[in-house]
Amino acid sequence: MRVLLLTGKGGVGKTSMALATALGAAAHGHRTIVLSTDPAHSLGDALGHPVGAAPVEIAPNLMAQEIGVLAELDRAWSDVQEWLRALLRDDADDLMAEELLVFPGMEELVSLRAVREVEATEAYDVCVVDCAPTGATLRMLRFPDALRIFMENFFDLERRGARLLRPLLNRVSSGLIPKEEFFEAFERLYREVEDVRQILMDGDRTSARLVVNPARVVVEEARRSFAYLSLYGVATDAVVVNRELPDGARGGFFERWAERERREQADIEASFPIPILHAPLHRQEVRGLEALRELARQVYGDTDPAGVFTRSRPVRLHKEGGVPVLEIDLPNTSKEDIDLSTLGDELVIRVRDARRLVALPASLAGRTVAGTRFENGVLRIRFQ
Ligand SMILES: Nc1ncnc2c1ncn2[C@@H]1O[C@H](COP(=O)(O)OP(=O)(O)OP(=O)(O)O)[C@@H](O)[C@H]1O
Ligand SMILES: [Mg+2]
Image (cartoon, rainbow, N blue to C red; front, side):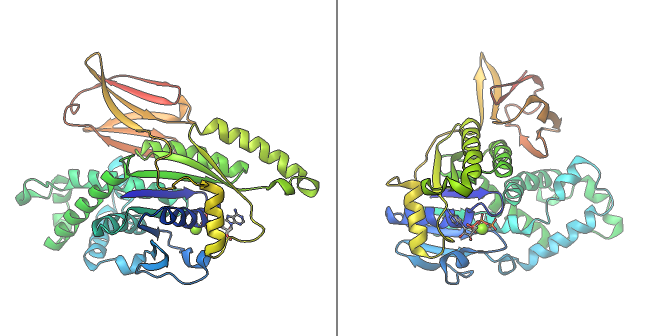
């Protein structure tokens, strides 16, 4: 199943573009579903009729579903959350605690599980995700790492008898011992999230598409998001520039806007070395199937939106003269923005305010970093 994540800053046109993309994919014969993981659902608004928590058919080959966070929230998990909150209350000062505090991100968790559930039905070839604005999408992508760190440090998955590790044992006296169901909920969750991680980090299956408008703040944010997506191992295969002034509207009152737009276009070309797709500003809101299909034609023409527009593996490990080298694409990033450290067998990579904990493969665990280099937007970490 192909997974397309339509993401971008608030209001740029993610929902419209997700629907247009899904309609295009369905028209090419793919069994398609469009999911909204934004808590402020708006698939229904854009379609002009309601979409609910259960999949509904909105066009031939096309289903739509708005994932309801509350509907998905199971009892076991809310217990776990409460327990975690209590646990983290006093010492939230170190990096580990910081990671764990990502936990209460319920929406992100629900979105991740939804993708997995859609895949498990085997009923679809394409799953288009109308993501929440970029910040939440990045939190979603960071979640599996946070969960993994938690599992590895607090639970011993292999030796079920001794699943509580030291940090927790210290709390036994304070009565914060979790019940058996907690462990089960956790283990289940962990495996589910791991499954989704495999899907999202596989560039043949998953592509992010960054929706932008030709406006300064939007492009700036997209430049950063492009690097963060890459840091989390998600390949972005296209940028969609939405709401461009149409030819007929570039003069008169809009002359200055058109001029500014040209500058932004040049910046977009320079910042994103991937296919750039375009959609004009419509005369009115893009609402209803007809307008959305028109948008799909403008963006994709005859091209199948389900295709992989450019192949990349943002995070890769290879050998150079027998020495293992980890490479991470960090476009639009400068050396000063990057900070590297280790935490046990994890490599902690910070890029401005985003952070990724990369679990080193068994072959690298215990090896020390011999050197790092950042050149042409690629971070290279050589191991001993
Ligand atoms: N090319 C376009 N021309 C005219 N209007 C557009 C275009 N693209 C989107 N819109 C309109 O802009 C508004 C915002 O679009 P949309 O809801 O798709 O953005 P969004 O990124 O999903 O927003 P949010 O971050 O709030 O979820 C909607 O009213 C939509 O109809
Ligand atoms: Mg939206």
